[in-house]
Length: 260
Ligand SMILES: *[C@@H]1O[C@H](CO)[C@@H](O)[C@H](O)[C@H]1NC(C)=O
Image 1: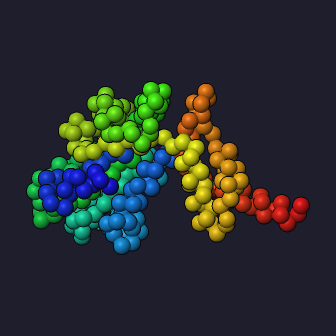
Image 2 (image 1 turned 120 degrees about the horizontal axis):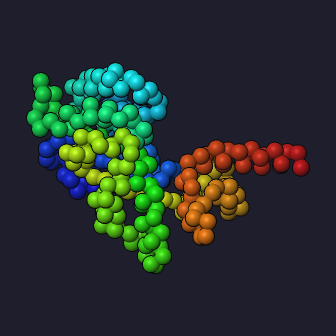
Image 3 (image 1 turned 90 degrees about the vertical axis):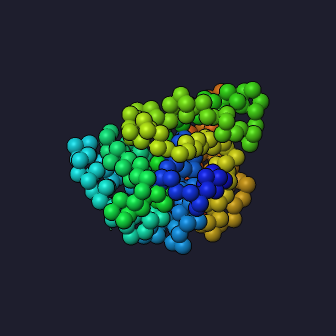
């Protein structure tokens, strides 16, 4: 959240704030978007001012790009005229039909109000898995050279943005948003390690009203897959589906308790 405040978003409005979150699946991109929504609006992601689009759900058909684009533009215009501080989250933007993303560009690019609507206070967040493999490779390299995860800074990963690792084939690829550098911040999300999985498992067990024993947490973490094969450093799916795994294990324990 440091990044949010560092750009003085509440002081200068040059254009809408655009952040692009990148990283392995289950690494916390949605989770952090939720933090932002919750810190901006009383109702968090349930606020009428927060708009979440998931490409595979909301824009599934390649052939309907034109219609999607028009709809989306209407929605952005309509919603921002109701509230200038609207938050738009585009999940799986790498799966958004090519070209569609350019429909958003005018709203980000406006430097003044258009017909009385000012888009400069809105926030756009793009989520995608692109760059995930490159971030992981960079992490492995740093791990091998003895660098702690906690000591990895933005500078260590910045070269990935420059290399365009975050813009590989997909929604942002070749988009005008990239060409005109309208993305203010590329935020890499590091792949999660076993200890993070254990924390997610613990939270989920407690959330379900159970006692988070070491044994149970270990069982959940054991169920997950890790890579690379030689040191099993990172979780393949991050904290995704931890909830279901915990649910399953708890049900299993309950069953054994009753019928053993
Ligand atoms: C606001 O956005 C939502 C989609 O999140 C859309 O359904 C709705 O029609 C929009 N409202 C306006 C006033 O454009």
